[in-house]
Image (tube, rainbow, N blue to C red; front, side, top):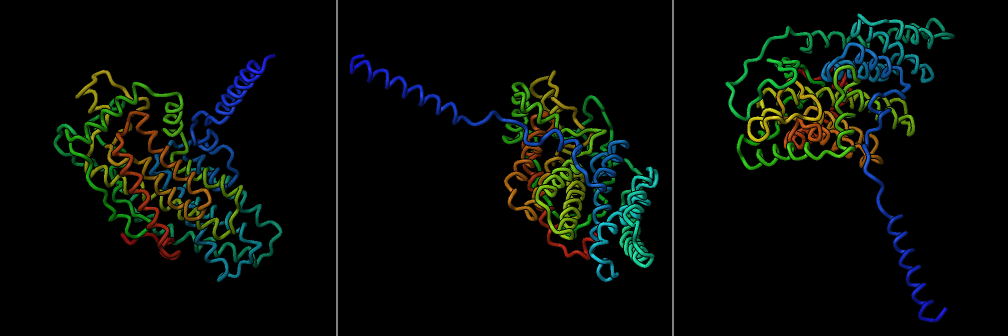
Length: 402
């Protein structure tokens, strides 16, 4: 082979090697951040989560009802740990105390459910313990649960359902949406539910863009444009985060995400339960705040705006839920969860924020929220999460004085 031919062959080889290295360096194909197992919670072994999530699925509770259940159970267990030392409960019996408190609280919070799923583990955990220690466990768990029982009677969640007075319709305001065509929003009294964290009831995002403004047009048309060119990953994310009736709901998903992280990165017992209590208080309060904003502005959904203004046959990828749009509940609850998890597990803060953003964007990909609903929801949720990180433990157990 001539010198010229050798140089040509070497150049060709180098070009091929360079092309191979470029190909090897290409980023992996995009995928949904939320795993299928996290979306169902199927791998979580934690008794409190497994038992309460089962009730949420079987009863087809909406996210607000689910968040209320999760928060009472987690706050009760955190409260019991705070009472353990004054009550003389030794550290090696604290796990039994958690199960006893779960059984005590579930007995009044979920009285229609099979109590064996809580009572059995509580009794089993106390086998081999002396009578005096069993009495200490019973007294501490009863004391932790009793105060929350009294709180639950006046938290507003059992108030009689009353229809809300809706503003006279005009473009930009919520109207019945297909396929449900509900006249009243889900949980119309939720804005009056008592929050856990003082100050969250005063958080107020700016109003949504008015009908016909540049941002309103841009963001609504974006929903229409995105819907016409959804990628497979966007469709999968929209469906995985949709979490409709019969799912563990967004609060359940964030519990599964947190518990999976705690299984791989354990925290001391008290910090473990403080994380879960504050996480669930924040998610409850985030949803209550979101519902307050929803019925303050009665903002319309994309399906109504797009069918009226541009594309009469437009349909979203997922079903539009029967309540006003602004702000997105998924975005708000996820912003709150990410804020709390970033505080307790800052080493994974990038993932928490990315999951929250994916949850928010999934609603745009699903065709049921414009971007301004999601952005405002994330900010509101982050503010709620920060408030719930600031309150002292004793106030957390009592909840807001509202």
